[in-house]
Image 1 (tube, one colour):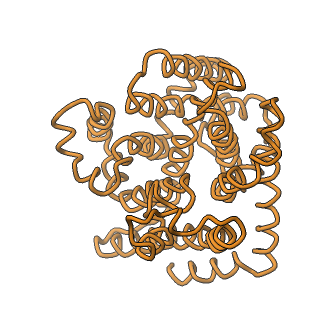
Image 2 (spheres, helix red, strand yellow; image 1 turned 30 degrees about the horizontal axis):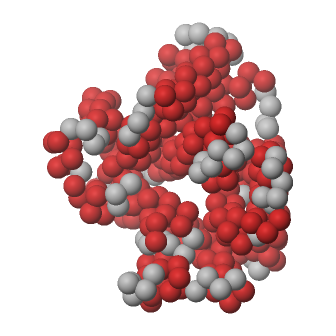
Length: 361
């Protein structure tokens, strides 16, 4: 690329920065969105922080596309085989990291804190069936930890990825499909078209939009660079930042329905990601603290609600200063994640994952 131009392709470090921002938003959202006890603006910001889900999905779609694009197969049979292996590697990494937390959280919750399986899953459901679904990450909002609903969503999008990748490859088809997703669920025809999505996972129809925007951004980064370099990177940062902030206000003022809010989250995410990348290019900063948080984001996502449920009510919420509450939850979640990663390293956890995945190449 010419020395006077900027490459807006998201680097691995910037991916972690975006995840770091997203996990901070997730914790802030779960702490303060339900109550105005800490002030009107604190609650409003916490509600907007729901955008964290879209941020994780955007970088997931983007990252999967970058990795999948490296697979070179001309024969249909080879493409199918390589795609299945690609998905299997992704699922193995997800499940082994998820199960590493699951086998800590669930027994600890049951035996130390009295959150039995019947309390978590309800007496109207089969406990063992619910447990198996939870182990598989498909229990949704009825998971042992309610915020694990995201597992079913991301797993569904993993399985849909090859199809979505093909749809977003050609710009005319990508444009039509994106419009279709944008109109959801206000058009009757789209409601019928995506009925299967509701049967499978009701969140898919709302969140597929931001996932495909991540896929599209990775596939058509040259086009994005071409248009973005028409103006200075400082203006790209300023415009994307102001656009993101404006959409946040629009989300709170004009988007009354949940579906409309999630739709706006997709575009808020796109501008936030662009502003982060532009800022990193402009300031030439690695933002290491956020990048480190991003590396621990999956662990923090899986454990922070457990901490919030069983530890925070006892001593943290006695403090009425929201920044301290947020820092306390983030610090405790991060510290536990670090300990878990140390244990994983001692147990050669990632070496075993690498050995398993290498057999699939």
